[in-house]
Length: 106
Image (cartoon, rainbow, N blue to C red):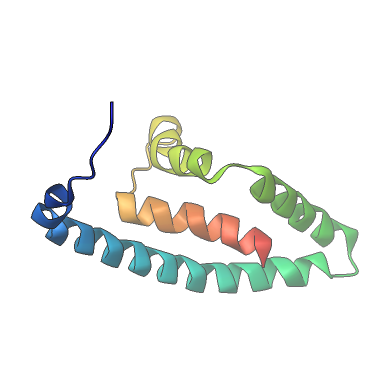
C-alpha cells in the first residue's frame, strides 16, 4: 500500500527537466515584457477621460482577469487555428495567451 519515491526516474530524465525549466523561464520573461507594453497601453486607455476609450479597456481587463489561463491557451492555440486558420507555434501561443492575461493584471 505504501508508495515509494523513485528518484532514478528523475535522474534518468534530468536533461528533459532542465530543458523544461529553461523553456518556462524564457516563455515567462518574454510574456512579461510583451505584457508590460500592452498593459501600459490598456492602463492609459483605462484612465482616459473619453468613455469610448475606457469601455474597451474595462472590458478587456474584466474578461482576461476572469478567464482561466488554461482556457486562453486552448483558445489561442486551437481555437484560432480552427476558426480563422491562424496556426501558432506552441511557444508563440503561450506567449500570446500569457501576455494577454498578464497585461490585464498590470
